[in-house]
Length: 343
Image (cartoon, rainbow, N blue to C red; front, side):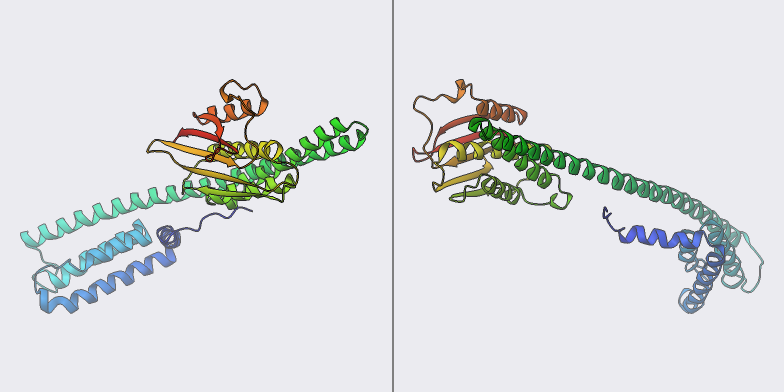
């Protein structure tokens, strides 16, 4: 079930006015009430206004009637307003007699009323069409979101299923320790991929800070590798990435920490891994993953390495349009994997 955003005050007001425009039995009485209120207000203001401004209080009533109730009720309010102003507030009063000045004033009022009603009616039609378009868009968004969630759920389930198949195969090959170890390692990776995939594509975590995402993923990696003696610390600036970049960064962290747990520490050995994602300068970001393990082999050159792990990291860095390098840790011990990519 997808929760759509609630309509704002403007949209709720538009929907409320639509009830009157589609219900003449409500719309016309409301227009008459607006006229009567305007007429009463004009009588009350008559001692101050005198013979001037005969149409002053009727303009808001016409505008409100046209906007809330529609073109027909707005026209009715305008006709009633013209007659009332002509009879009671234009000289000679209580008469429909006209001179040149009065005729010009009434003609001007009629012109303004017609223009206002037509413009408001057109705006109401456009607003109604926009509202319908928005409702269709929300329905399509809900459908697309549901399908996407279902797709991601199936992908994660398929990864879990592959892991289960590998576990079955590993049990059948217990007589071959090397094959069993390789299958168990592949199963752990598939299980880990499944959990990370669910986290990355969870709509509820769309606004989750990147540091928190990486921290949860590091915990998953440590639990999957049963490396209870190794601590993982995450420091990340308050940055916002799209899902593609977040996925690539997560896969880099996954690959580096998995390699560190496999090569940097002995089984059961205590260790410390630090993940740090910070701006390097105004145009670049730096992801540095440092461990305090045994370090790189003597004479190792990451730029010439043919190891699969290094190739995978290079591919991930290239997708970020960045570079990757391996170097000793900041104190000369351990290993630091450094990825620099454009902000």
